[in-house]
Length: 338
Image 1 (tube, rainbow, N blue to C red):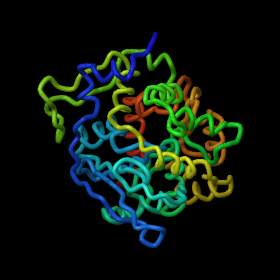
Image 2 (image 1 turned 90 degrees about the vertical axis):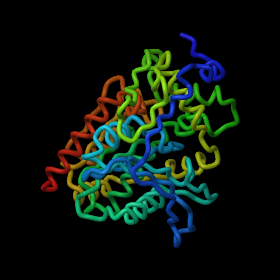
Image 3 (image 1 turned 180 degrees about the vertical axis):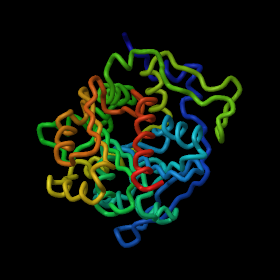
Image 4 (image 1 turned 60 degrees about the horizontal axis):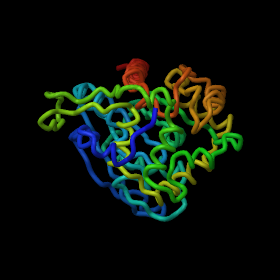
């Protein structure tokens, strides 16, 4: 199957509806890092008004819009139960992109300042979920505020990027390190993040419907694309990643390092039963051995290696991922006496 060109994707009737108009319940642009090389501003949104506080931490280059399947599921369809924080890490989206050395620990501190601003400061009330570099940031959050975490959910991430993982090649697959056309960037990223058979399959996104709370639905509604690839390409065309910020975030991910002893201490303080590690067997960005090592080091309450899963379960198996994350949140609430 030959994938359509960027021009062809842009002419799809569904193209204007690729990014869903999910209206946040709260939003802002918060100055952080005043004494850490800043200040710099972090763009954030909270979707939903429920008591269960869920934080979604994106990987390299990801923006708030990348979480739309999860934002819809938790923050709109279940907005009476969940409050979902999505935000742009420094270097991405609507947040500032200062040219300085980024680290996953500094990015975790940015997030903690946002949490403090929101008043999300209670014991065992945060359900933290991060993928790829976002999973590395989530580890650092757990190191800094373990007593505030109700559940820690890490997917497609690593304690440290192993040299055998060929990180330069992996980042090259993301399409933003080297000068190339948008067409080449999108195809390279798609190949790195998803199995070919999923990209070729019919668009399986679950779309907002008329009556979805706080969601603007245009006449004609949200439309399906020809395939999962076409939907992914359309979203990439709309978002268009910031290249300089991408490279600075890549440095942060490349230098992230948590030892066996550090992760054991993290798990002791968070509580192993509260931790989940998820990885796919066909993850080209972070090969599955990274996930296996993280499971070995953390000994989490739930460690899952999924056959046929790539680097982005938030899209490839969105409904399954959302239900799994909801299950983990419910367990964390139970363990916290709620």
